[in-house]
Structures are given as C-alpha cells and as structure tokens.
Length: 291
Ligand SMILES: Nc1ncnc2c1ncn2[C@@H]1O[C@H](COP(=O)(O)OP(=O)(O)OP(=O)(O)O)[C@@H](O)[C@H]1O
Image (cartoon, rainbow, N blue to C red; front, side):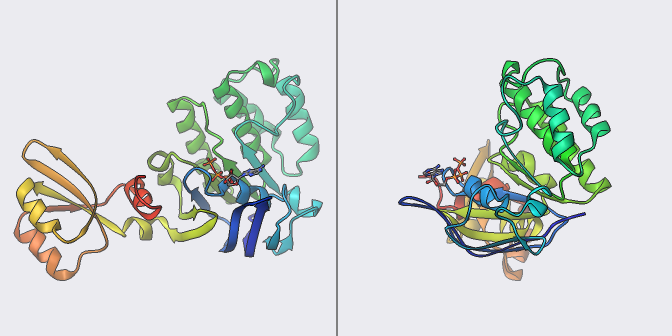
C-alpha cells in the first residue's frame, strides 16, 4: 500500500518565522522522493506537518486523500524518523521499544525488524541511551523500515552513521521499495550519496517549493564539458558556469542549461567531451550559489 500527498497553500509558522510558505504539493504514492534544501529551508517543518506532528498555520495537508492532523486512521499509516528522536525513551532497552512498535504500528513486521537488528549489528539488550550516535540512527532507520508504513519519511536519519551503515540504509530502502512499494521521502544534505535512489527531487528554499522534478529531468539541467583548457574556456564563454576543475592541461567545466544543436556540433568538432553534472553543483546554483 502506498499513500499520496497533497498540500495546498501549506504554511507553518513559528511566531515570527515562516518555516513553510505557501507550498502546493501533489505527490503520487509509491515513489522515493528526495527532499533537499539548505539549512533552515523548512524540510523538517514540512515533514512534521505531513506526518501530522504539527498543525499547519494555514492551508491543507491530505495524505491518501484524508486530512492528517489528529486523524489516527492516517497517522498510524505514517512513520517519520528524525535522526533517533521519537522512537523511544533513552532508558528503554531496544527490545522493549520494538515490542511497543509492534503494538502501535499496524503494518509492523517483526521478522524483518529482527533481521535488521542483525544486519545493523544492534544489541537488543542495551538501552537506546547507551548506544553510540550512529547506532541510535541505525535503530531509528530500522524502526522506519520495519514499520512498513505506507508513508515512511526519514529526516536526515543517517546522521552519525558510518559509510558502510549509510550504504546499508540506502540498500535497504531500495530493496524494500522494490519488494513492497510504498511512499518514501528522504530529507538529506548527502546529495550525491543518496540521490541515486531518488525518483523525484523536491527542493525547498526559504520555506518555498523551488522545484519538484524527476531526478533525470533535474540532471539534464546541466552539462559538463571536458577537454583542453583553452578550448573549454572558449566554449563556455558567455554560458553560466557552475564550477570548474583542472587536471594538468585538461579542464572540466560544469555549465547550467541545455546545449542547442549548434553547440553540440561545435563541441564534437572540437573534440570536447560532454557529460552529466553533479546534482550537488546544480543544487548549489539553484539555491543561490555559495554565500
Ligand atoms: N521550534 C521552532 N521554533 C521556532 N523556529 C523554528 C522551530 N523549528 C524550526 N524553526 C525555524 O524554522 C525554519 C525552518 O527550520 P527547519 O528545521 O524546518 O529547516 P531544515 O530545512 O530542516 O533545516 P536543516 O537542514 O538545518 O535541518 C528555520 O528558520 C528555523 O530556525
């Protein structure tokens, strides 16, 4: 089972701060969404309203067609994991937290939770508070995965995890998604590492939805040009250059925008190599560049 997400003119305000501002979303269920945005862009606030943790100041949220705030029928179908918080008390052994999750979550899969305990090498008898930072995050991720919630959201849930554990996390999300499609949203700053599993990308900027695109569509907004430095310089003159790398006489320039037929022909004629740009470069450019 998957859940769709619709918001109209969604706003979340904390006193003077508008954290989410006039956001309209229409997200079909059964996809993996990446949620990107700079620090303070409103990602956590948006996810909290989608999960029904916070009441919108204005506008509406519908999950699977139903309002979410104080609607237990819907909130039990949603799992939001924010690093390690919210999965249990620090003094509780992991086994007790798992027993509680089994009671509270209708689609909880105990066998899968057990498998993940082993896969993430988590100690059942230890308390949540006695785990290392990365282990606590891994346990949060385990709860999100084993919840099998039709809408599962991870808000920077990888914080503190080492590289192999983060890879395990992404592999598991993908494996789950393929075996039992559900709606996943992953909020992250690890753009290059996590984007390979995204189907669509949402970018929030200063509370507003800057873009919502298929990953491939977003990638096609830029092109890298590689070749002898002086030829690359001539070729990119007048174009929006996102970044450059130089290795000896060779230069690689990342350009924003698509190249027309004439430019493509010219690049081929000069022996320049064209390729994709890093999503991170596009993200930096689209969210205002380095400041
Ligand atoms: N509880 C709160 N009270 C007041 N302001 C808040 C609160 N939580 C967040 N904010 C503000 O709302 C804005 C959005 O914060 P939010 O945590 O949603 O951003 P974020 O995109 O998740 O950031 P980060 O990437 O740094 O985690 C920020 O300006 C932040 O200072």
